[in-house]
Amino acid sequence: MRAHSDRGRAVELIERSRRAGAEDPTAPAAIRAWLSKRAERASVRVDRTPLDALDGWSADPDTGDLRHRSGRFFSVRGLDVRRTEGQGEGWSQPIIDQPEVGVLGILVKEFDGVPHLLLQAKMEPGNVNGFQLSPTVQATRSNYTGVHRGRAVPYLEHFLSPDPERVLADSLQSEQGSWFLRKRNRNMVVLAPDGPIPVLEGFHWATLGQVHALLAEDDTVNMDTRTVLAGLPFHAGDPDEGARHSTTEVLSRLASARSRTDMTAVCAPLASIEGWKHTSEGEIVHESGRFFRVVGVDVTTSGREVGGWSQPMIAPSGTALTALVVREFEGVPHVLLNARAQAGLREIVELGPTVQCVPEDLADGAGPLPRLFEEVMGAEPERVLFDTVQSEEGGRFHHARTRNLIVDLSGRPLPKESPDDVWLAPAQVDALLRHGYYLSIEARSLIACLRSRV
Image 1 (cartoon, one colour):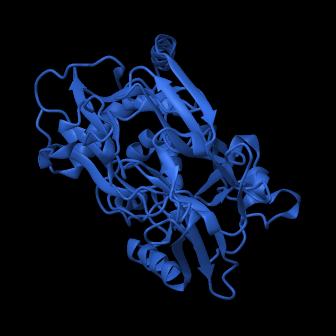
Image 2 (cartoon, one colour; image 1 turned 120 degrees about the vertical axis):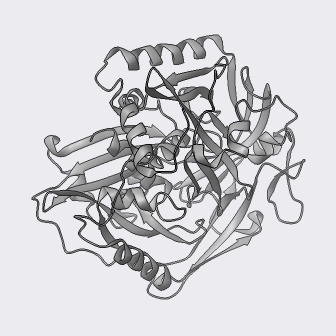
């Protein structure tokens, strides 16, 4: 089947895939069984290792920055963040600097009129459970250019120079701005060419309806798949129809938030950042014990481009919370997003979830509770549309998990809107996701989850 540039056709194709398998209770079980079988057949070992003992990695003698001997992949540097008076205190922290653009791509093909997504069972060293459902291609530039001297990345040819008529989604999107320094990945969904596509070991075709069912299960659909799913076209036509605010007003509010947020983030020597220390166990931790640690791991595995490697990782202090409030205005559902600053974002401010925090970091009065935190956490069970713990990117973060919560507060009185809050209709979200740097990765993950419930 040839794709058409008409967005309505793409929306119809995605809707057919969404409906297929959504009501079949056996489909998720079959995919879970396939994932389990992959895990049983694989040989995986991840050992915590002191940072100064990592093979191929060393601390720069002048700065203390952690770098790979190839000069590629990524480095761990220091970051000094400063804010003007009245906008909060500054801070220092380690941060991952990975300037290259990776590819996160999902291949789509129709079988008997039903579009399917080609996904892979991928092990990441930071995953709490080994294998999770990943995109067809999930690769950094260092990976697919062969810096690791491993096997070629399967199916990559479909994403490097795709036929424009077969592209369903394609945008540069940000990653976690609290842990990455201006990192971005190319998020792509591409229709496969006519003819058979060989299914390699470790890959599986699934409908969008089946994937949506699996989103309700903890630590099953990985972060990279969720961010790509968020970019799928779900709406055609005028995005402002029935919306509380026009898209022009939404973009104006975001521009205003960016202009009034006076935050500067400057790289600094990792060895000299304030408040952080090296431990006798070979880790880098904050003196308060909060936030996160920089740890090292040695990895041995089968089924990857290379059989083993070592690397530093970020290990957060607790399970994060991201929550999305939804409600109807004159019969049209809306989501409440919040313009939130993160020092590692290229634009500093993007539209994020209604609530975003790590509750453990706020315990014992260590910080103020986020706006609408109590409304979200105290919502009646019937108002909770989605509540699942999902893994963050397991290639760089060790056992990083986030509780994704979606709450319907329709008809409920809410506090007066903050200048950083904005209500968006679903079609507006869809339109913004066609472009990069508008919605944060935390917001995109929640949007993917929300679409599995509507």
